[in-house]
Length: 119
Image (cartoon, rainbow, N blue to C red; front, top):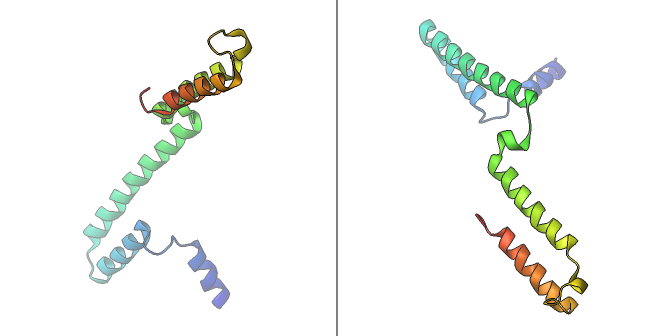
């Protein structure tokens, strides 16, 4: 019997979770025969659940970075472009970057600029 109780406890949300709080409140209301308030709380919870399900469906349909985190996508694109420019650069062909040290200084300044927000 204790095994069944332990398994039931594991299936419940963790302490402090909004569903636990709702369960406690519903228990109190049912003990006080306040059926209308119970119904209101359950329907309100159902509406929140429907919104969560809709968000989940939207995520499954399109979980792209552009859709959910557009600023992150733009920032990653900018960083990728800057890094690709540094990777493609050949310091030996640039007269103004005559040494590897000058190339490193140039690459560091480009990277620092790209890492600044709204660069």
